[in-house]
Length: 102
Image 1 (spheres, helix red, strand yellow):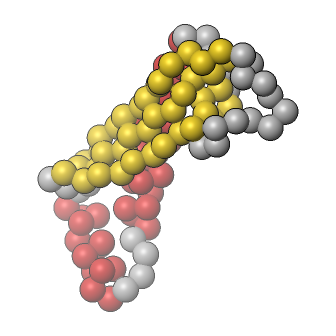
Image 2 (spheres, one colour):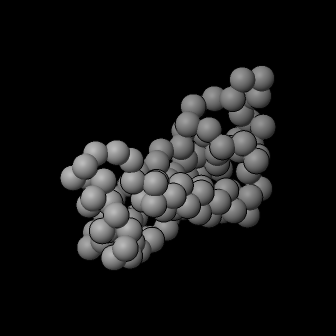
């Protein structure tokens, strides 16, 4: 399965658009990560614990979208858009794209 943010895939001709597919995940951040991140904010530097959570959320949302595309017989998802939000110490990662067949 090819996943791409571009509207086309080099060397492939899109024969059919199967529709929009999406993936979502909500991940809670714990107090220890919040404390470490606040220290990083104060002193400067990267928050590796939050970066790890972001990567996990992205991978989970993309996998969910890929599974949805596979279930309808798609070969790829093009035009993928990723979005990150936070609500009450919860990280929300969503992605959507267009499932296609070659």
